[in-house]
Image (cartoon, rainbow, N blue to C red; front, top):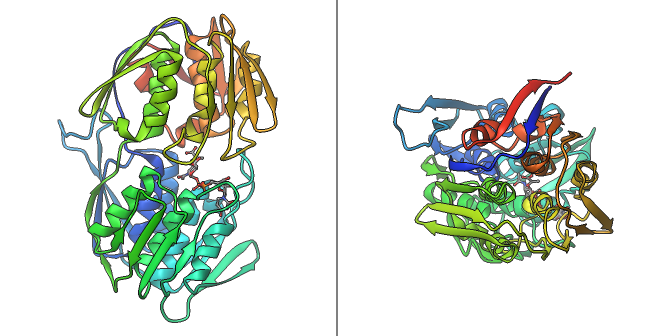
Length: 434
Ligand code: EPU
């Protein structure tokens, strides 16, 4: 297991290329199970979660091939070649526990398998560091399309007699809409008979990206990006070429990296439209963000103001940037308040930030952050992906050395983060854990 050693205090300055979105690519790779012929995906980041998903679709009968990027290609410095996915065997229907336990997004194969192969066996995802993550809304939505479910030996077993049938349904839950649930049901509905209307659908850019790819495959989806998605089922989908959207959470993390180090970063290949709530909050903190086409320029004033922020479904402030914002607000003037509405227990970073000198008190789903003058380096533990990113950010500005253990959590979702940060002046290295 690797660790990061970060010697804090360097102002970041320079250019970072943003990778393709992990959370867009994962369900899109799963959706390729429904297509006939080859699908070519561009901008798929190289991450351990993507490796898990390509392994899973490989086990489900897909041939997956990653091209080398031609020299000087427009794929950015990470030079990722396109990913080709072709279904060659439709006989397998099982997502094993071994894979599902490492990556909950494995649930995304459920809808595509049921719609195309009429059967799916998916291990039930277990507990998760960021709180309970049930899949009841996925199941309910697919049931409404006609799939039948039972549980057997820790697996969800789904079957379809004949073809799924479109209907009008409400897909929201107690915490609001579900991103992957919307995608799962939308994928299945693309091959169902008749029209499906998803009311209370998630509006996240990742849902839109998946719908756009499905439409290139021949699906007839409208209204994606709004809470009401209309899907006219088609008989078949065929492979297409699609470029994954830029990763808005990676973009937000590097914006905060510039702000927390009082640096100046140019972020290329990103889409600021997907970060409107984030730029709104950061503007109030005192972070300056300017855009020119697909590039943004970030700088900040030395004084960071206190703010209040509540995570919300898109277009609200994303839960996936809550921990990183908290790291920044540790150095704000006065008292900031963060409320987590999507995953009310997603606060594993609080204790670790406090070990670095933060003054954060948690009350239910709310964290109260008293700004301090400086953070100090310490040995801390990466827990979930975004909590770990917050510790990297804190380490960049902390006095002395921060050691972050278990960085495999970060490798799940940030492509070459230490290389990208080192290239703009951070003193960060990857070492083998003691
Ligand atoms: N929920 C249910 N029942 C369900 C599904 C969800 O009650 O069947 C609840 C969840 O417990 C949560 C809320 O609904 O309280 C929203 O969860 P959602 O289903 O939207 O989450 P997800 O689709 O499983 C994706 C991202 C997460 C991100 C959330 C929220 C992927 C692979 N994962 O998860 O990303 O936090 O949406 O935006 O796209 C991350 O990248 O670090 C990450 C955790």
